Image (cartoon, rainbow, N blue to C red):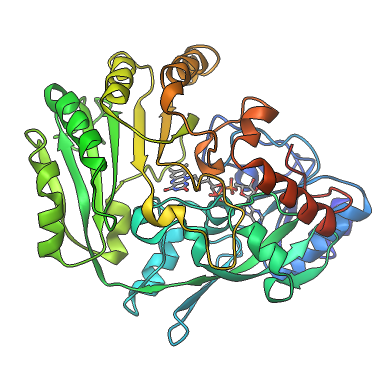
Length: 442
Ligand SMILES: Cc1cc2nc3c(=O)[nH]c(=O)nc-3n(C[C@H](O)[C@H](O)[C@H](O)COP(=O)(O)OP(=O)(O)OC[C@H]3O[C@@H](n4cnc5c(N)ncnc54)[C@H](O)[C@@H]3O)c2cc1C
């Protein structure tokens, strides 16, 4: 069987017996090991289409992995299509559009656009896959000023579950679904993303030491009520390990990290950031004018694979009582990091021609994680339940799939979209993948 697929594609095909199998199936989350029957490393649109047709003919389920940052549940059967080799990035400068391969990650897109004074509405991490991220909507450092990243998606070439090559220009329902719908009955070969003219940001992070974390957090919560619509912020309670690889001022400390992004001139940025700088004594001030190509420095997300247990929820609003409930949990949390991102403004406005993304009505998203596998079975799920219970009065009914982490049930998964959107997504899947080759929303 592997030989018959290998004769149809130019990329490599591996079974579990092959040495190339383990690196090909590896995900960013080292706690997840995929074990598909076959994995194919597609290199082109033709490979992608042939791989889907091959699986469809045999009624094999198909999964897809790009940069691998979305792996929470192991893939244990069928054909895994690995898109990492489809990592081409081309910038059409006059059209201010990036043409991005279905397996590319954000870092090279940001770098290629910056060469022309252009900027994509990227996520916080340079190693996250563009396709996986945009299929979940995408809430990045410019969320409040520019909205969901998927609003900037203007087109794509796709392979449907039926094995047909299609373009969203001829299939507007697929463009709608692609903007945040996640499972859309088609795989992405190439994306077209609108870029903005931007060379620098006023952006970075303020670090507050343990004894000032609660004051800084409470002030931030108050500040969000009247925050300027052009500013996007987040706060994260982080426990830095006492390891030599961690920079000395962070090593072994429990800090509050407040990330700030203003896409405008430095003087106005500094004026807007002043109340946050005054929230409490600042341990490290790494906030200032930042070239767009260094956007990943704002959040400094991990770029090396590691084990992770991740979950999250969305909030309608925050207030002083929320701050108290949240801090009660944070004081003895087993999570190494708990982050709250401020949304609203542009995230509430739908793309002109519509989108499937979930979480438009949310005011904030909370995500929390730990890399300690000894806590995965019991301690972290229990702590997550306690946090969700404590935050119930502020919880938004509508979550976002990129922030849900490992779904705990079909009902939990379904909170990532409004019911009406889920129903329309099911119709799109049925149209483009009637046999269910690519897997469906539960
Ligand atoms: C360190 C880190 C930082 C993050 N930061 C942000 C952030 O700032 N904002 C945000 O919104 N999210 C963020 N996320 C979440 C991330 O956007 C999602 O987990 C996303 O799904 C990851 O995409 P991927 O391609 O890297 O993952 P993969 O595991 O490769 O893919 C995840 C899923 O996306 C789909 N998919 C991927 N490629 C294709 C394709 N070519 N065609 C069709 N479907 C495809 C498949 O359903 C696949 O199972 C972050 C995650 C991590 C680990």
